[in-house]
Image (cartoon, rainbow, N blue to C red; front, top):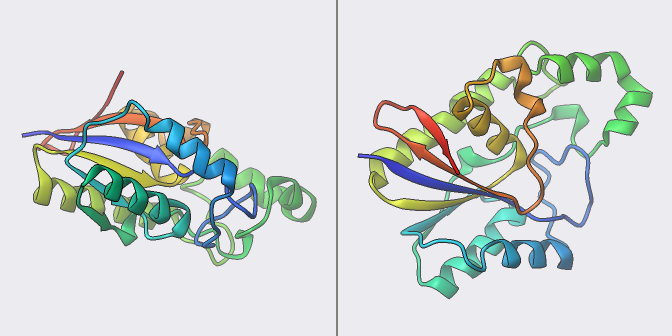
Length: 191
């Protein structure tokens, strides 16, 4: 059987752009509006799964209640932990640590931000979460509220992109993508 996933990135957050990682900032009013608009004609789903960080989980709770869907929080679908770079903008890092930022942007698998989570560990935990979802909910349609990094990783795999192109995948606030996860573990992006 196949697991149908619809990925939805959280909306705009109170503390703005930059590398949010494990920082648990809330949505702005605009962020709430972005998400509400993103799901107006979306679905149907059998359940909602969300990162436990509030920028995802609060909207997931609202949506699950409105649509009468079961909701579960999945810690392994949290954003990459950026270590000492958490909360920093790219502009700040260009000024402070341009060489390291350039290494990260050119090949995030080969360079880990100081005190950060290695991309291989991030990939392993995200894929483990997907395997659990498939084992528990195979054949269902699941809305997954998560983060840009998680979505980039899954979309890059579905598009068969080389690892060094991971950060070339664009995912905007409240943007949705549909994927199909086959029993073999193969991911396919759907139109």
